[in-house]
Length: 87
Image (cartoon, rainbow, N blue to C red):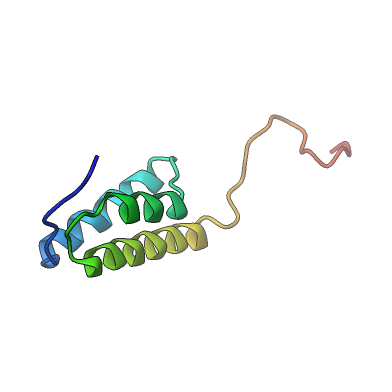
């Protein structure tokens, strides 16, 4: 898929991109920023490269923000933890 004619974002476009990345992460899914960057680099035909840079900035920001909030996520594994000790 080749994307052509990309134009700079307005505020609504940036909000849409930001919201989509946030929904992906909050839904428990993940994305690989490098994969997005590679896809954009190979898919943009005659577009404004600043759009690609802005999408990448938003993707990085949303991922970092999500990871910082969820750094100490607890995983329920029953009565015992994975440390091997008995509690």
